[in-house]
Length: 243
Length: 243
DNA sequence: TAACATATAACTTATATAAGATATAACACA
DNA sequence: TGTGTTATATCTTATATAAGTTATATGTTA
Image 1: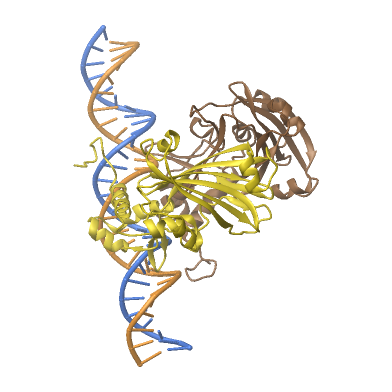
Image 2 (image 1 turned 90 degrees about the vertical axis):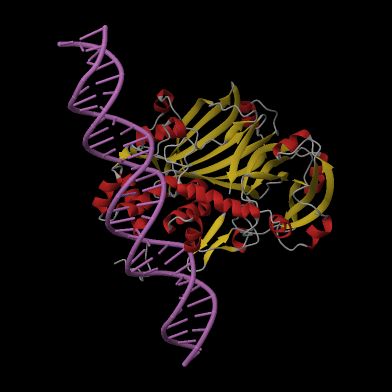
């Protein structure tokens, strides 16, 4: 049991958080959906409304749920206007917000090398998809992305699907595979442009580029994407905030 | 008044947040201090304990206050072990946590150029201090910092004070001037090393460096520091997380 | 009657208070 | 050294009111 003095003690609201997360993992509520009202959830989990509220408050603070007074509580989605740029940290220096255009270069099926497999929690040699693309601002190529995802999680993914999809890649993952990205870790370095990148980003070889390595996670902190972005930061910056 | 229907309505807990922040600005409680208990604050502000708690919860979420069950609620401080590295995002790639050693290069008094003045909310030409230093990991120089602060806020600052201080720079600002950094915004680019930086960081000229521009804020979102860091990211990365 | 505006009701989350039980930490004292 | 006391934050429940949203009913008007 979970008595207050037991070593594995978790407060009730934390257990409710886990139960809600499990429903998200199971796909009971999908991104964009409204979840049941606080009162309904309180009845379902047999706790008070205040305890459900605290659980939802924390999930909302983590940007997993979104509360809307009068309307309900919704599963956060990259398809929504407001959060479609949530994970894009490259911005124009002049402050103007511009959504980049994407040019898909290739989609291939590969075997995960050790490094990639480790990051994605797969066996070495597991099947993965590799997506290459070029993001441009004002028609100027600025970011070259190589994106790796487990084939087992994204069964049936192919180039045409991506090409025909109107929104962002994370929006695509949500609508076609029900996989929502909720968190990401990035490691950034300054590196010299290699010949291929220099060509794609239209810079001189050896020019300084920002190399942004990302691992992205879905519900339950499961890693489902590993990407490397090479950014030409002339008139653009990687913007971040800390507290 | 603050009736619920007035256009300037703010919830009670938000007003309490402001009152607490004002006490922090006034220096009534300094970094590291315990603030009064929830019950005392409730009596002082004539609201319920729950309302005080909600205000403190939010300030704790912003890392301005730190709650410790059984002990009390404390003003966050960069002098504490746990948060001394809170704003240092450069980490070793091998995962080992190492606190860099600092070599102070110079402390000068200057007049703020337009760009700096704007960021620090000063008049152009206002007096500022400029601190230059070199941070090393394992004896290898990795970060060259140029740090600018308003002279009016840091009256009497000089090189010897910094040199004799044992802790981090932000800890120094707190203990000598009562200024606590609570938030920072950073803009990052990849740039080629100039001759001076190349020499200091022991890299070839034109080598790619990470350029990290930061504006740091104290209570009430007042900007009090503008710095530019140039980082040699061989075997080191700038690490960040998003959600 | 049909179209439109308004009022009402029913639902949601948000705010605020109160009260009691529990966990943690510090201290006094035997 | 240990044991109880006290003070703190934490957790849980309960209740009430406010405020935002939507659908429905009720008019009013053309």
